[in-house]
Image 1 (cartoon, helix red, strand yellow):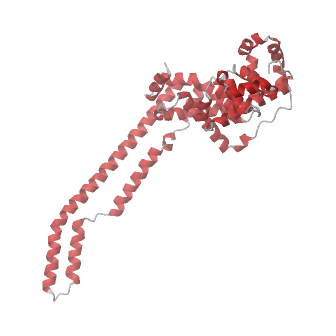
Image 2 (cartoon, each protein chain N blue to C red):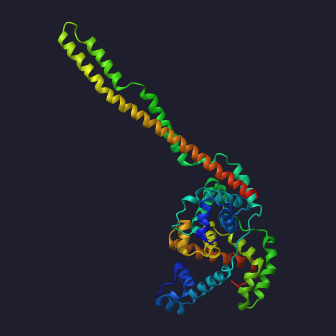
Image 3 (tube, each protein chain N blue to C red):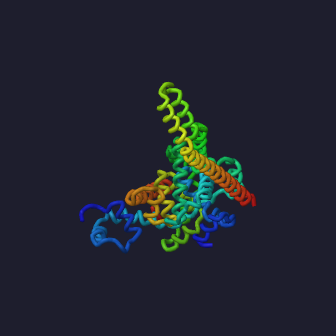
Length: 185
Length: 198
Protein backbone atom coordinates (compact mmCIF):
# COMPACT_ATOMS: atom_id res chain seq x y z
CA UNK A 1 0.00 0.00 0.00
CA UNK A 2 1.61 3.24 -1.17
CA UNK A 3 -1.15 5.86 -0.89
CA UNK A 4 -1.93 7.54 2.40
CA UNK A 5 -4.91 6.68 4.56
CA UNK A 6 -8.15 8.29 3.44
CA UNK A 7 -10.35 10.46 5.67
CA UNK A 8 -12.78 7.54 5.86
CA UNK A 9 -9.97 5.19 6.96
CA UNK A 10 -8.98 7.58 9.76
CA UNK A 11 -12.55 7.76 11.03
CA UNK A 12 -12.86 3.97 10.90
CA UNK A 13 -9.58 3.46 12.78
CA UNK A 14 -10.58 5.83 15.58
CA UNK A 15 -14.04 4.32 15.83
CA UNK A 16 -12.93 0.69 15.77
CA UNK A 17 -9.17 0.40 16.31
CA UNK A 18 -9.40 -3.38 16.68
CA UNK A 19 -10.85 -3.78 13.21
CA UNK A 20 -8.02 -2.12 11.30
CA UNK A 21 -6.95 -4.23 8.36
CA UNK A 22 -3.43 -5.63 8.16
CA UNK A 23 -2.63 -3.48 5.13
CA UNK A 24 -3.66 -0.26 6.86
CA UNK A 25 -1.79 -1.19 10.03
CA UNK A 26 1.35 -1.93 8.04
CA UNK A 27 1.11 1.41 6.27
CA UNK A 28 0.51 3.28 9.52
CA UNK A 29 3.60 1.72 11.10
CA UNK A 30 5.82 3.11 8.39
CA UNK A 31 4.15 6.40 7.36
CA UNK A 32 4.88 9.41 9.57
CA UNK A 33 2.40 11.62 7.69
CA UNK A 34 -0.50 9.29 8.40
CA UNK A 35 0.65 8.75 11.99
CA UNK A 36 0.62 12.50 12.61
CA UNK A 37 -2.76 12.96 10.96
CA UNK A 38 -4.22 10.11 12.97
CA UNK A 39 -2.65 11.39 16.16
CA UNK A 40 -4.24 14.84 15.82
CA UNK A 41 -7.57 13.29 14.97
CA UNK A 42 -7.30 11.04 18.03
CA UNK A 43 -6.54 14.02 20.29
CA UNK A 44 -9.53 15.94 19.05
CA UNK A 45 -11.62 12.80 19.44
CA UNK A 46 -10.52 12.46 23.07
CA UNK A 47 -11.38 16.07 23.75
CA UNK A 48 -14.76 15.96 22.02
CA UNK A 49 -15.60 12.77 23.84
CA UNK A 50 -16.39 14.93 26.88
CA UNK A 51 -18.77 17.21 25.02
CA UNK A 52 -21.79 18.07 27.15
CA UNK A 53 -25.21 19.39 26.30
CA UNK A 54 -25.92 23.13 26.15
CA UNK A 55 -28.67 24.16 28.55
CA UNK A 56 -31.77 25.68 27.01
CA UNK A 57 -34.10 28.31 28.40
CA UNK A 58 -35.55 27.20 31.75
CA UNK A 59 -38.84 29.02 31.09
CA UNK A 60 -39.36 26.65 28.26
CA UNK A 61 -42.71 25.25 29.46
CA UNK A 62 -44.32 28.68 29.71
CA UNK A 63 -43.07 29.65 26.26
CA UNK A 64 -44.40 26.47 24.71
CA UNK A 65 -47.81 26.93 26.35
CA UNK A 66 -47.94 30.46 24.95
CA UNK A 67 -46.98 29.21 21.53
CA UNK A 68 -49.72 26.61 21.63
CA UNK A 69 -52.29 29.30 22.33
CA UNK A 70 -50.99 31.26 19.35
CA UNK A 71 -51.84 28.51 16.87
CA UNK A 72 -55.60 28.08 17.25
CA UNK A 73 -56.05 26.76 13.73
CA UNK A 74 -53.07 24.44 13.62
CA UNK A 75 -55.34 21.41 13.14
CA UNK A 76 -56.52 22.94 9.88
CA UNK A 77 -53.09 22.26 8.44
CA UNK A 78 -53.76 18.53 8.54
CA UNK A 79 -54.38 16.98 5.15
CA UNK A 80 -57.19 14.78 6.55
CA UNK A 81 -59.29 17.88 7.10
CA UNK A 82 -58.66 19.14 3.59
CA UNK A 83 -59.55 15.73 2.22
CA UNK A 84 -62.82 15.70 4.15
CA UNK A 85 -63.72 19.23 3.04
CA UNK A 86 -62.82 18.36 -0.57
CA UNK A 87 -65.01 15.26 -0.52
CA UNK A 88 -67.91 17.22 0.95
CA UNK A 89 -67.56 19.81 -1.81
CA UNK A 90 -67.52 17.15 -4.54
CA UNK A 91 -70.56 15.45 -3.10
CA UNK A 92 -72.34 18.79 -2.74
CA UNK A 93 -71.61 19.75 -6.34
CA UNK A 94 -72.83 16.33 -7.50
CA UNK A 95 -76.08 16.69 -5.59
CA UNK A 96 -76.73 20.19 -6.95
CA UNK A 97 -75.89 19.44 -10.57
CA UNK A 98 -77.65 16.08 -10.71
CA UNK A 99 -81.03 17.78 -10.10
CA UNK A 100 -84.22 15.95 -9.23
CA UNK A 101 -84.81 14.13 -12.50
CA UNK A 102 -85.49 10.44 -12.00
CA UNK A 103 -85.96 7.55 -14.45
CA UNK A 104 -89.75 7.94 -14.30
CA UNK A 105 -89.54 11.64 -15.12
CA UNK A 106 -87.31 10.88 -18.07
CA UNK A 107 -89.65 8.25 -19.58
CA UNK A 108 -92.75 10.41 -19.00
CA UNK A 109 -91.08 13.14 -21.04
CA UNK A 110 -90.07 10.64 -23.71
CA UNK A 111 -93.69 9.48 -23.85
CA UNK A 112 -94.95 13.04 -24.42
CA UNK A 113 -92.28 13.67 -27.00
CA UNK A 114 -93.13 10.48 -28.89
CA UNK A 115 -96.85 11.20 -28.99
CA UNK A 116 -96.39 14.77 -30.22
CA UNK A 117 -93.66 14.09 -32.76
CA UNK A 118 -95.30 11.11 -34.46
CA UNK A 119 -97.71 12.07 -37.22
CA UNK A 120 -101.32 12.22 -35.94
CA UNK A 121 -102.65 10.11 -38.87
CA UNK A 122 -100.36 7.20 -38.03
CA UNK A 123 -102.57 6.00 -35.21
CA UNK A 124 -101.11 2.50 -35.01
CA UNK A 125 -97.58 3.68 -34.61
CA UNK A 126 -98.64 6.32 -32.11
CA UNK A 127 -100.47 3.71 -30.04
CA UNK A 128 -97.48 1.36 -30.06
CA UNK A 129 -95.09 4.13 -29.02
CA UNK A 130 -97.42 5.28 -26.27
CA UNK A 131 -97.83 1.75 -25.01
CA UNK A 132 -94.09 1.18 -24.98
CA UNK A 133 -93.67 4.34 -22.92
CA UNK A 134 -96.44 3.27 -20.59
CA UNK A 135 -94.88 -0.16 -20.15
CA UNK A 136 -91.49 1.37 -19.54
CA UNK A 137 -92.91 3.74 -16.98
CA UNK A 138 -93.60 1.16 -14.20
CA UNK A 139 -90.45 -0.75 -15.10
CA UNK A 140 -88.42 2.34 -14.62
CA UNK A 141 -89.82 2.83 -11.15
CA UNK A 142 -87.24 0.21 -10.21
CA UNK A 143 -84.60 2.55 -11.53
CA UNK A 144 -86.15 5.33 -9.45
CA UNK A 145 -85.82 3.20 -6.36
CA UNK A 146 -82.20 2.56 -7.21
CA UNK A 147 -81.50 6.26 -7.69
CA UNK A 148 -83.28 7.00 -4.44
CA UNK A 149 -81.10 4.41 -2.73
CA UNK A 150 -78.01 6.05 -4.22
CA UNK A 151 -79.13 9.41 -2.91
CA UNK A 152 -79.63 7.85 0.51
CA UNK A 153 -76.09 6.44 0.36
CA UNK A 154 -74.77 9.86 -0.50
CA UNK A 155 -76.64 11.33 2.46
CA UNK A 156 -75.16 8.64 4.66
CA UNK A 157 -71.63 9.35 3.41
CA UNK A 158 -72.09 13.09 3.93
CA UNK A 159 -73.37 12.48 7.44
CA UNK A 160 -70.41 10.18 8.21
CA UNK A 161 -67.92 12.70 6.89
CA UNK A 162 -69.43 15.51 8.94
CA UNK A 163 -69.36 13.28 12.05
CA UNK A 164 -65.73 12.34 11.45
CA UNK A 165 -64.78 15.96 10.91
CA UNK A 166 -66.57 16.94 14.09
CA UNK A 167 -64.91 14.15 16.08
CA UNK A 168 -61.49 15.04 14.68
CA UNK A 169 -61.92 18.72 15.51
CA UNK A 170 -63.09 18.04 19.05
CA UNK A 171 -60.30 15.50 19.56
CA UNK A 172 -57.65 18.02 18.47
CA UNK A 173 -59.14 20.75 20.64
CA UNK A 174 -59.12 18.46 23.69
CA UNK A 175 -55.51 17.47 23.06
CA UNK A 176 -54.49 21.09 22.74
CA UNK A 177 -56.32 22.01 25.92
CA UNK A 178 -54.65 19.14 27.79
CA UNK A 179 -51.26 20.26 26.56
CA UNK A 180 -51.86 23.85 27.56
CA UNK A 181 -52.86 22.73 31.05
CA UNK A 182 -49.77 20.55 31.27
CA UNK A 183 -47.43 23.41 30.52
CA UNK A 184 -49.15 25.93 32.72
CA UNK A 185 -48.25 23.81 35.73
CA UNK B 1 -40.14 4.83 32.46
CA UNK B 2 -38.15 3.30 29.59
CA UNK B 3 -38.32 4.53 26.00
CA UNK B 4 -41.08 2.19 24.86
CA UNK B 5 -43.24 2.96 27.88
CA UNK B 6 -42.64 6.65 27.33
CA UNK B 7 -43.76 6.44 23.70
CA UNK B 8 -46.83 4.38 24.59
CA UNK B 9 -47.78 6.85 27.33
CA UNK B 10 -47.31 9.82 25.01
CA UNK B 11 -49.47 8.19 22.37
CA UNK B 12 -52.40 8.04 24.76
CA UNK B 13 -51.84 11.65 25.80
CA UNK B 14 -50.25 11.10 29.23
CA UNK B 15 -49.21 14.59 30.27
CA UNK B 16 -46.57 13.35 32.72
CA UNK B 17 -44.96 11.29 29.98
CA UNK B 18 -44.75 14.30 27.70
CA UNK B 19 -43.40 16.37 30.56
CA UNK B 20 -40.66 13.81 31.14
CA UNK B 21 -40.01 13.65 27.44
CA UNK B 22 -39.49 17.41 27.29
CA UNK B 23 -37.16 17.36 30.27
CA UNK B 24 -35.15 14.51 28.74
CA UNK B 25 -34.76 15.98 25.29
CA UNK B 26 -35.13 19.76 25.35
CA UNK B 27 -31.43 20.51 25.88
CA UNK B 28 -30.39 18.00 23.24
CA UNK B 29 -32.83 19.39 20.69
CA UNK B 30 -31.75 22.92 21.53
CA UNK B 31 -28.07 22.00 21.21
CA UNK B 32 -28.62 20.39 17.81
CA UNK B 33 -30.72 23.35 16.61
CA UNK B 34 -27.94 25.70 17.67
CA UNK B 35 -25.51 23.94 15.35
CA UNK B 36 -27.67 24.76 12.34
CA UNK B 37 -29.16 28.10 13.33
CA UNK B 38 -26.27 29.38 15.50
CA UNK B 39 -28.45 31.94 17.26
CA UNK B 40 -29.80 31.20 20.71
CA UNK B 41 -33.23 32.85 20.41
CA UNK B 42 -33.93 31.24 17.06
CA UNK B 43 -32.70 27.85 18.26
CA UNK B 44 -35.15 28.16 21.17
CA UNK B 45 -37.95 28.76 18.69
CA UNK B 46 -36.90 25.79 16.59
CA UNK B 47 -36.93 23.67 19.76
CA UNK B 48 -40.51 24.72 20.46
CA UNK B 49 -41.54 23.90 16.91
CA UNK B 50 -39.90 20.50 17.14
CA UNK B 51 -41.84 19.64 20.29
CA UNK B 52 -45.09 20.73 18.66
CA UNK B 53 -44.34 18.56 15.62
CA UNK B 54 -43.44 15.60 17.81
CA UNK B 55 -46.62 16.00 19.82
CA UNK B 56 -48.78 16.24 16.73
CA UNK B 57 -47.09 13.27 15.05
CA UNK B 58 -46.22 10.91 17.89
CA UNK B 59 -49.08 8.62 16.79
CA UNK B 60 -47.33 8.11 13.45
CA UNK B 61 -44.05 7.01 15.05
CA UNK B 62 -43.84 3.30 14.28
CA UNK B 63 -40.67 2.53 16.24
CA UNK B 64 -38.91 1.34 13.07
CA UNK B 65 -36.03 3.50 14.25
CA UNK B 66 -34.91 4.67 17.68
CA UNK B 67 -36.90 7.50 19.22
CA UNK B 68 -33.79 9.68 19.36
CA UNK B 69 -33.10 9.15 15.64
CA UNK B 70 -36.67 10.21 14.82
CA UNK B 71 -36.47 13.26 17.09
CA UNK B 72 -33.12 14.49 15.78
CA UNK B 73 -34.27 13.92 12.23
CA UNK B 74 -37.28 16.19 12.87
CA UNK B 75 -35.00 18.72 14.57
CA UNK B 76 -32.54 18.78 11.69
CA UNK B 77 -35.26 19.10 9.04
CA UNK B 78 -37.06 21.82 10.98
CA UNK B 79 -33.87 23.83 11.38
CA UNK B 80 -32.95 23.33 7.72
CA UNK B 81 -36.42 24.43 6.61
CA UNK B 82 -35.96 27.55 8.67
CA UNK B 83 -32.64 28.21 6.94
CA UNK B 84 -34.20 27.70 3.51
CA UNK B 85 -36.94 30.19 4.35
CA UNK B 86 -34.41 32.63 5.80
CA UNK B 87 -31.34 32.24 3.55
CA UNK B 88 -29.61 35.24 5.12
CA UNK B 89 -28.99 32.95 8.09
CA UNK B 90 -26.89 30.70 5.87
CA UNK B 91 -24.02 33.15 5.78
CA UNK B 92 -21.16 31.65 7.79
CA UNK B 93 -20.23 33.39 10.98
CA UNK B 94 -17.00 35.33 10.52
CA UNK B 95 -14.14 34.44 12.80
CA UNK B 96 -14.11 37.07 15.53
CA UNK B 97 -11.62 39.81 14.85
CA UNK B 98 -11.96 40.87 18.44
CA UNK B 99 -10.00 38.27 20.34
CA UNK B 100 -11.58 39.32 23.64
CA UNK B 101 -14.29 36.75 22.90
CA UNK B 102 -11.69 34.06 23.47
CA UNK B 103 -9.56 35.80 26.10
CA UNK B 104 -11.80 34.76 28.95
CA UNK B 105 -11.17 31.13 28.03
CA UNK B 106 -7.40 31.37 27.74
CA UNK B 107 -6.72 30.96 31.45
CA UNK B 108 -8.93 27.90 31.61
CA UNK B 109 -7.09 26.45 28.66
CA UNK B 110 -3.75 27.03 30.38
CA UNK B 111 -4.99 25.28 33.52
CA UNK B 112 -6.17 22.29 31.56
CA UNK B 113 -2.98 22.18 29.53
CA UNK B 114 -0.96 22.13 32.77
CA UNK B 115 -2.53 18.85 33.78
CA UNK B 116 -0.63 15.65 33.11
CA UNK B 117 -1.92 13.53 30.24
CA UNK B 118 -3.50 11.00 32.59
CA UNK B 119 -5.30 13.73 34.49
CA UNK B 120 -6.23 15.68 31.40
CA UNK B 121 -9.17 13.51 30.47
CA UNK B 122 -10.79 13.77 33.88
CA UNK B 123 -9.94 17.45 34.04
CA UNK B 124 -11.62 18.08 30.74
CA UNK B 125 -14.78 16.32 31.75
CA UNK B 126 -15.10 18.40 34.89
CA UNK B 127 -14.06 21.70 33.43
CA UNK B 128 -17.04 23.90 32.60
CA UNK B 129 -14.98 26.27 30.51
CA UNK B 130 -13.84 23.58 28.13
CA UNK B 131 -17.48 23.14 27.12
CA UNK B 132 -17.77 26.82 26.21
CA UNK B 133 -14.52 26.62 24.29
CA UNK B 134 -15.58 23.56 22.34
CA UNK B 135 -19.05 24.86 21.48
CA UNK B 136 -17.59 28.20 20.51
CA UNK B 137 -15.18 26.45 18.16
CA UNK B 138 -17.85 24.12 16.78
CA UNK B 139 -20.06 27.12 16.01
CA UNK B 140 -17.41 28.35 13.60
CA UNK B 141 -17.59 25.15 11.58
CA UNK B 142 -19.91 24.74 8.58
CA UNK B 143 -23.25 23.67 10.01
CA UNK B 144 -23.17 20.11 8.61
CA UNK B 145 -19.84 19.42 10.32
CA UNK B 146 -21.20 20.88 13.56
CA UNK B 147 -24.29 18.69 13.32
CA UNK B 148 -22.27 15.53 12.63
CA UNK B 149 -19.91 16.23 15.56
CA UNK B 150 -22.85 16.96 17.86
CA UNK B 151 -24.72 13.80 16.91
CA UNK B 152 -21.57 11.65 17.11
CA UNK B 153 -20.18 12.88 20.41
CA UNK B 154 -23.02 14.44 22.35
CA UNK B 155 -25.74 12.03 21.33
CA UNK B 156 -23.36 9.07 21.05
CA UNK B 157 -24.86 8.07 17.72
CA UNK B 158 -23.30 5.60 15.33
CA UNK B 159 -22.33 6.77 11.85
CA UNK B 160 -25.21 4.75 10.37
CA UNK B 161 -27.71 6.45 12.67
CA UNK B 162 -26.35 9.85 11.71
CA UNK B 163 -26.92 9.06 8.05
CA UNK B 164 -30.58 8.40 8.89
CA UNK B 165 -30.86 11.76 10.62
CA UNK B 166 -29.20 13.98 8.04
CA UNK B 167 -29.91 11.84 5.00
CA UNK B 168 -26.36 11.70 3.64
CA UNK B 169 -24.27 8.68 2.58
CA UNK B 170 -22.03 6.97 5.15
CA UNK B 171 -18.79 8.09 3.53
CA UNK B 172 -19.96 11.71 3.35
CA UNK B 173 -20.78 11.64 7.06
CA UNK B 174 -17.31 10.23 7.78
CA UNK B 175 -15.74 12.98 5.69
CA UNK B 176 -17.68 15.64 7.61
CA UNK B 177 -16.59 14.09 10.90
CA UNK B 178 -12.94 14.01 9.86
CA UNK B 179 -12.92 17.55 8.46
CA UNK B 180 -14.91 18.88 11.40
CA UNK B 181 -12.33 17.57 13.88
CA UNK B 182 -9.49 18.87 11.74
CA UNK B 183 -11.00 22.33 11.32
CA UNK B 184 -11.92 22.54 14.99
CA UNK B 185 -8.33 21.79 15.89
CA UNK B 186 -7.16 24.52 13.55
CA UNK B 187 -9.56 27.01 15.17
CA UNK B 188 -8.41 26.09 18.69
CA UNK B 189 -4.76 26.23 17.70
CA UNK B 190 -5.27 29.69 16.23
CA UNK B 191 -6.83 30.90 19.47
CA UNK B 192 -4.64 29.20 22.07
CA UNK B 193 -1.36 28.72 20.21
CA UNK B 194 -0.57 25.53 22.04
CA UNK B 195 -0.45 21.92 20.95
CA UNK B 196 -0.37 20.46 24.47
CA UNK B 197 -3.81 18.95 24.23
CA UNK B 198 -4.65 19.06 20.57
